[in-house]
Length: 336
Image 1 (cartoon, rainbow, N blue to C red):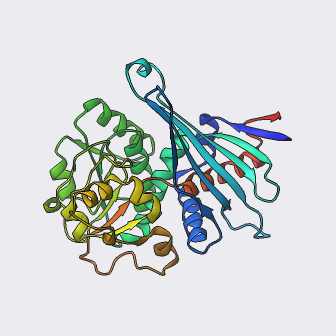
Image 2 (cartoon, rainbow, N blue to C red):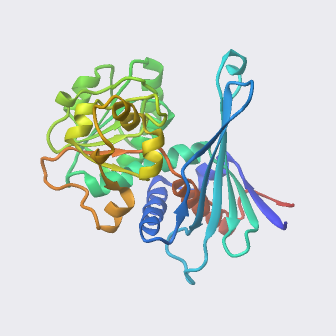
Image 3 (spheres, rainbow, N blue to C red):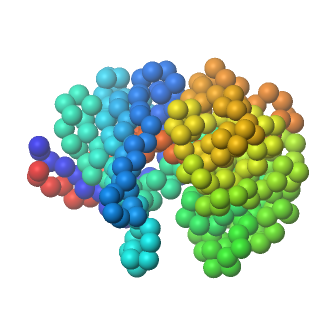
């Protein structure tokens, strides 16, 4: 099989910045829209007799950025992760994430990349790309609802993009708010913390919801005209963060329509209830990035990016990390 580079969580954190991840993800969606890259919707395999599953996200011909020469160079990749629930697993890390990266020309395995942090980072990077193309220019107040790991990477990515004058994070858990504030402070950002979600949302130009809620966490009346929303938390078909009337009234963009209609609870739940139809989706992010679909049609329009995480994001960022690791000789190389 040849030599394979193993990259740990620490390696990944030291090799890629939020802005670099955003550039890689933006290129990936441009290539996907132009037919250069391909991906399949997430595959879920349930584990018999155990409350757990394995999920697989494959993508092919994803190239890192800047665009390499010759253009035929690229990567095949698959993200694999397992998830378990139940009391027997409460002392264990419940989810394990890995990206396997292969050479596009030969199929040779090149790298095994730890992908827990990478997954959170690429989610934040993708939301930042959507915000770049959909939010009103000059957006200066950022609100993050949900102060967990995903909320933190939303904050760091969007702060790097927007350079906001004000960052507000809303959560009901004081310890999570404190951890979020420390993370942002380490990057040079002051954060206002609150348990008043309504007040935080009403003040915001850009809103990110990053929760595990099964019921909407914001209300339509709280969202001011012209605001942009990144809804990234409801990535299972039984979870919701956004009410149906807000989805109906907003301009809605998704990463990959096929997968969104299978997994995005913010869409799946109200579609099954007859509250909305699939036609509420105005288009995919790749079309917005390439300019074939406008991100917004007026300064007053509320825009909504519904994210669930797709394969080209993981593989694009993993490819970028791998190339930097190669250049810096990071990680551990093993002969397989």
